[in-house]
Image 1 (spheres, rainbow, N blue to C red):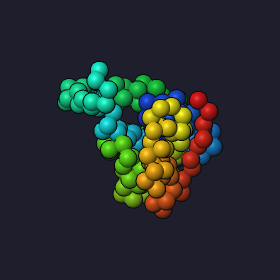
Image 2 (cartoon, rainbow, N blue to C red):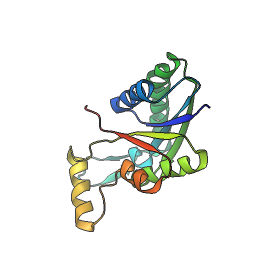
Image 3 (cartoon, rainbow, N blue to C red):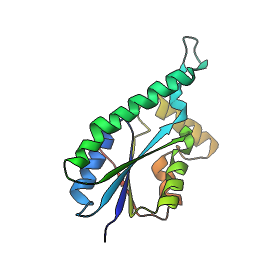
Length: 165
């Protein structure tokens, strides 16, 4: 019986390692893989020269960022699976930064993959992660981890990889 394994990817080295891990440990003959690429909408908002002022760079920049990310997936991720004769499908969804886990969960409910493979991004390192953790602690929430959300809300089996940089 063939299975579909869903691997959540972005533009990080962790995505490459997640695919390599899945090939080595999960995917077997007859399986297929869906690369689920979640594009956070907030990626398109950048800091201006005035501290604290947020500037939306507009539709043109949005399309450039999406195109760059699609090139990364096609150029760097798909060949890893193709080299092992694993059928691959690419799905892309957009979500607000704090709703990435919700987007992944919706996708899993609608498509019923045999397994989700996620890479935990260490959000406690770096300024943005530290700020997010402080606000989350102050408001009583979690740090916004997509993997935490999926673990709490998905009925699909999930593997969360804690990968070294």
